[in-house]
Image 1 (tube, rainbow, N blue to C red):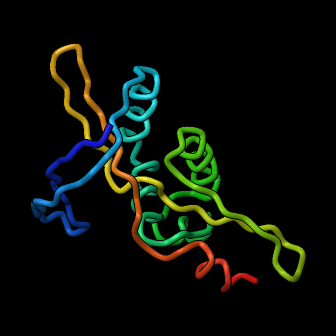
Image 2: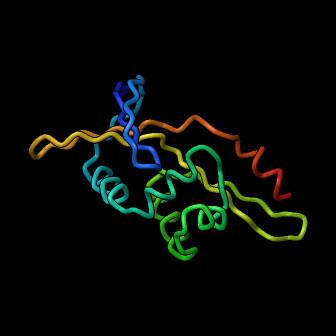
Image 3: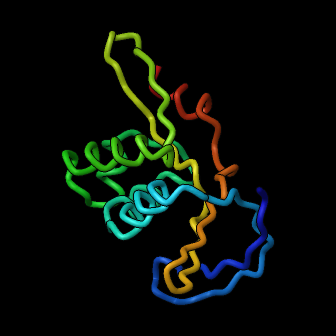
Length: 140
């Protein structure tokens, strides 16, 4: 099911801006999926990783450098995000035989509405940023 929404954007400097953009998302119906996503968005490290990988695919090392999140935490949270289908992974082997992986947020926004015992949730897919192939080319 497609939905429309108005989004409130918070900049990194802490200033608030409202963006009245029509976003089209997919409604989440399963309670277990909603619970998992609520836990993820309540985690500051998961939010940091989603933000860091929203516009451009990045390696775990790049995510650590940009966010200051310890590398072991980045890897654990990336696994959680991937298990919940919120981050995509692309990997390859470079000329030196070293494996590397790039991560990109699959979501642009997660919209929730709490009304008593009922929680409405929708995921707005991330369709922006650099393609996987453009970023991968700098590693091979």
